[in-house]
Length: 318
Image 1 (cartoon, rainbow, N blue to C red):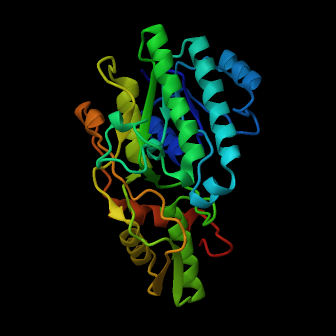
Image 2 (cartoon, rainbow, N blue to C red):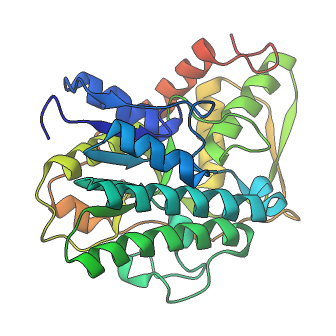
């Protein structure tokens, strides 16, 4: 890539897409393409084809899609599958048709078997059934990953790059307790509990499952390494993690401390935990030259500061 390369970021206002936009702007790329949903509905194949014909992107970062926590996944499984399958099919097909040089597709660690050797290597995919609470989303992302591999296989090239980041967090995350992922949802819950003077907060599950968290800016750095580098010798997909995890209980305690909430944390063990552990083996990407640089505690602090400045959560955001 060079400064004039036409780079389309799908999902540019979301957590990962906005991080990629910031990184591209910082590095001086002057021809970044984006489109709001009101202007381009990615589930509409004809609209996607028209957009690609007009914009003629050379590189694509596909960060758009429907995501959410356990509640959302269990409530709207058909919507998760319909939306993600349609977006992936339409964007990958259009990208191939117009000759895009590279496409990065974001898959999910939910794709791995629920009971999986840790850390999870890419070779473990499809060796067992994913966690049932996120099965529809996992299957849709498995389909997108396999679609990338199928294009590469059929046409003898490596233009389609599926990556598997672990639990992402940072600015522009979804902080809704019902639809957001665990870290961002905890930030809002503890922030509101602090402002309301609540003596306790009840959280789902046992608190024992372990999760690996990666800041969106580190994910964006990895994208630039892959877009600019020679990936011909890489084997896809590629895990993208920090190599460190913590229990949900430890996460909750860290978020509460960062927010300044001093109340009691109670656990409703009758609610689902999800997969027991999801730690990625990111050695493929690490050997390519990428390294995460944002410490978890520092990333959490920065995320909460962003929340305070930018989110009005029912009057408690600022």
